[in-house]
Image (cartoon, rainbow, N blue to C red; front, side, top):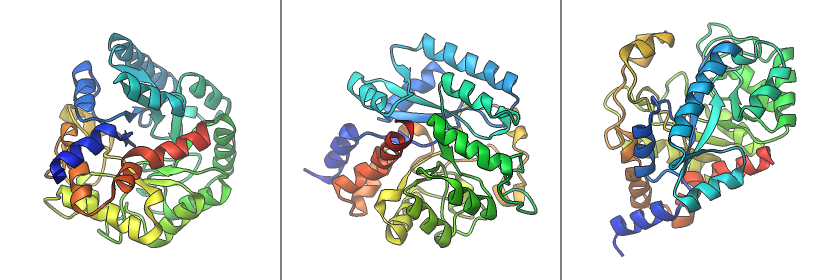
Length: 324
């Protein structure tokens, strides 16, 4: 069997989990993700919003899912990912990309869990009442409320996402958690020195925790200009060599289908992030090109078992440990 045929078979058989997809969801886009061979994808219900706004956004998303129930299903337990695979459906993991949505009320975490939220970022880019993001000038670390929120999330079985945490906040959060965490869409400074990327010391902390880093295809995390799929795999290679293959997955964080006005909410400095809308790396410009990643891993010499870990089994392990 040649490499192309082998890659197609592995891709077809694997549990494939995308740790973050920032695209505008629609019935047509659901079909694109399914066409890409992805078993389950993680979609943010909201980035930074009030409780009421988040409920409205979730309501619209649930309506869209109901209109497409023959092809998608909400994932609340790890075994539902396996069930989606058997049924040929797309599993949708609902997340919050910040903690502002809890409005400093720990009891709202229980409400969000009942509504289907299974992962929450401690911070987005800026400071909130739990901790500090990488976009701030000074890192004040994890707050007392941040400690309490992490403890409550772990009690409820909500997976903690430390993506975008500033250095001190990340370190202090890892000292508090008792279960594995994820950094759903993060890259590494050892390949490219973007300020959002993770240092070797941070990689080692994640490995000690037993968590997973979802390597992103976000262009400005990969290279100064004209990034490619090869550079995505460079980041995977680096994590593998530095801390081991058990701690790396994929979190494309791809943006597709949004009007230009959508990007205004991020207020990201163009000298660091470039001007939106951002063109995704050559070879994975759209989600339907996701199978190219499997092909590239095979070309780099990854074994079938190693590929399946990166494509989804590592994330699945953490889901089983946290959502049980």
